[in-house]
Length: 113
Length: 114
Image (cartoon, rainbow over all chains, first blue to last red; front, side):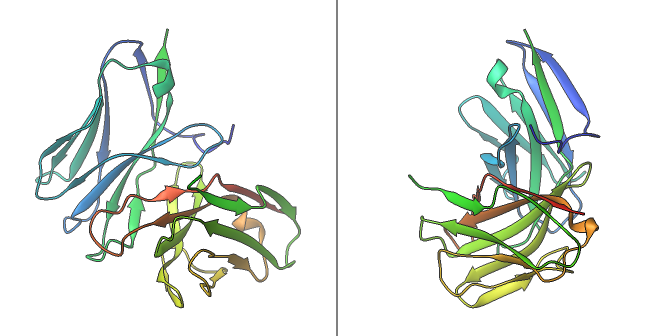
């Protein structure tokens, strides 16, 4: 696979447990955020998004929490599965037109059998 | 199949030899973008385009050019590549100009400049 995560923080969880991946963003004016999943050798894939007028948004097994006071975003994955092993990135939209995104450095999630 | 394609997927070249990485999407998206991904730095935006003939600089545009003559294509041009442009490059497209911005990414192009 691609060596995109040589120096990434790593989170290891047991299969079936819940995972929480954290992200600090930089711009207090950012109004839209996305979580992406990147598997080895592939491009990032959209997981879930949230607008700044929300604190929480839920997907099928994922939940995103937004704390604007401390500029913090988290991704919760319920009942983590081996297929969830990947690098996860948060991205913030730093302009009002939704064109310019800044990505976090990423967190590698390893799911242990 | 709806997708973003990039070519080539892997390229090794030498300093100063002009190259182009092509990007094409078949989803009729208005918005397209190029990123580079480096270890420990995540994805950094190089250029983006909101529509045909409209391009803007991202965070790291130096050493790169782009063009958007057709809606589906957004090539990335390195006029005189240098070793610090060795990286993994991703093209992305999105269907809307504003609002929620789910971006669809291509598979990536691994570029090595010797």
